[in-house]
Figure (cartoon, helix red, strand yellow):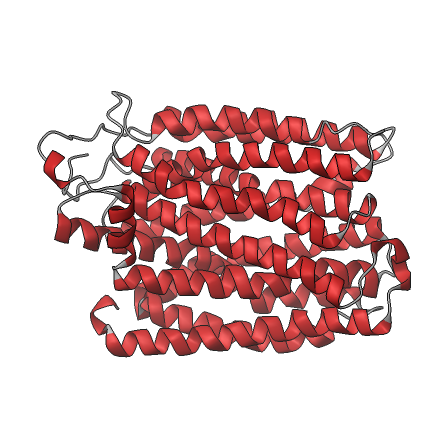
Length: 454
C-alpha cells in the first residue's frame, strides 16, 4: 500500500473478510477471556479483595494502552517483505497463546496473595503481547478497503465473528467447574490451554496467512515522518476521532462499569450467592446478548447506511436508555427468564461499537491521510485501542472500589446486606440510563457543528 493512496491493500473477497473476521474472533478472547475466567475464579471462588483484584486486572490494561501508540507506529513504519501488519499478527498470536495458557498454571497450595500476584505478572506479559496482535489487526481492518459501503460490510462480518465468540466466552468457567475435573484448578488449566492453543494460536494466525498486506514505501515520503508524540497529537486533532474517544468512554467506561454489576446481582441477589448457578445464568444472559446482537448487526448496518452513522448511534443510545429503565424490574429473584429482555433492549449499542465506531475511526484515518499524505492507520488503531483499554480499566477499577464502598464481601456468600444488593441494582440501572442520555446529547452537538461528517 502506497503512502497517501486510498487503494485497498488487497482485493476484497469473501475469503479475505472471513480470514479477517477470524482474527476478530481471536481478538475478543484476548480482550475478554482473562477477565471472564478470573472474576469467578479469583474473586468469587478464592475470595480475594475486590479492590486488589481490580488493580491486578487494570494495571496490565493500562500498560497495554500506553504501549499501543508505539506498536501502531512500529507497524506503520514496518518495511518487511511480508507487509506491515502480518508479521506482528503471526508472532503475537502464538506468544499471546503461550502466556494465556501459563496464566492458569497457578499452584493450588500458594496463598491467595501469591496466587493473585502470579496472575498479575503473567497478565502484564499477556496484555503486552496481545497489543502487538490487536493494533496491527485493527489497522488491517481499516485498510482492507476504503469504500464506505464495503467498509461497513467488513465491520458487519467482523461483528458476526465477535458475537460468535461472545456466545461461548461466559461458558468458560462453568465448563472448568464440571465434575469431570478433579478440582477447579485442573478445570481452569484444561480450559485455559484449549483457548490458548486453538482459539488464540490457530485461529488468530488466519489473517496473517490468508490476507495480503503490501509493504509500505518509505523513501518517497521519508520527510513526512513524525515522532510518536507528533503522530498522537495529529490524530487527536481530528474532530471525528475526538468524538469517537468520547463515545467509547461513555459506553466502554461508564456504561460497562454499570454492566459489570450484573454478574454480582445475578449471583448474590437472584441466586443467594450460588456462584455456579449464577455463572450459568450469566452465561445464558451473555448468550442472549450475543444472539440478539447478531440479529441487530444487519439492522445497525442498515440504519448506518440509510440515516448516517451519527444519527444511527443516537437512535441506538435512546433505545439503550429505555432498556436501562427496564433493568430494575428484569433483575428480580424468581423471574429468571426475564433476563432475556435485557439483551433485546440493550445489545444494539454493543453491536454499534463493533460496526459504526470502527468505521468512524477508519473514516477519520482517511481524512487525515488525504490532508497529510501519510498512511498511519496503525496510529489510529492504536489510539482506538488506547481509549478502549483505558475505558475498560476505568470500569474494572471503579467497579472494584464501588463493591468495597457498598459493603460487598465475597466471604458472606448469599448473606450480603440489603443495602449492598440494592446499591448494585441502582448502579446497574442508572449506570445504563445516564451515559446513554449523555451520548445522545454529545452526538447532537457534534452533528450541529460538523454536519459534513454525516
